[in-house]
Length: 148
Image (spheres, rainbow, N blue to C red):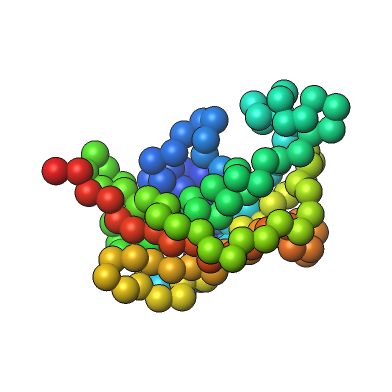
């Protein structure tokens, strides 16, 4: 299993600040599994409005972080990289549940496991944890989007 620093992540995701939500990949096994982290800081732009009196990371951004992790795993598995004509896009989420809040100072651990690929749709199980406790999880579907 290999790891990826931020510079390798930037090669495998088209996202940039303020929307890049994976800081490091701790381990990745192409075709199977990825474990990465998102360090949640008070400086995140969404905390000024969500919520001013008690900052909480929006659930949709936790899901987006998991979706970005699936994109990295898909690109690594396909041995390709995003470009002007190709990218992996989120096409569905199923059975998602939120269990706990994520606040500034937390380290969000993102774990995605490839379940199957059928007709160009990649299915992943995604789990996000903080301090070993599940904060969110569900099935994430992505597909390669091509621009001609």
